[in-house]
Image (tube, rainbow, N blue to C red; front, top):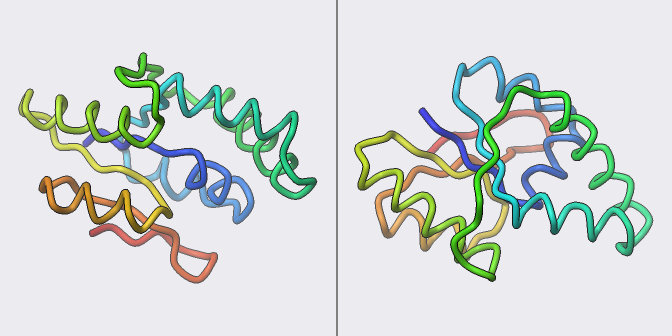
Length: 126
């Protein structure tokens, strides 16, 4: 299974130390360049706590064996949806890690699985 992670999900994974839990699932983790760019921007110009979480996420993701992919749209959420649909149409099982309710609803409507973080301590797959 392929797991695409969005910006806030990456920050929460780092903040709540859940990256190892995601890695244990044995999934191929995909980081779109637009998400990485957004994390870098937040790490430089965001609120203090967001800067810290974005920096930590970048550091942890940088040490992981993950797949980096080019975004197909300028908007981060749109690029995640497009990439996930393309992977699904190609016969791959794909899930998106996101804390964004609107993005989650759009993905579920398209039959794409979603992972969220529950109670700051576990991942919930749906």
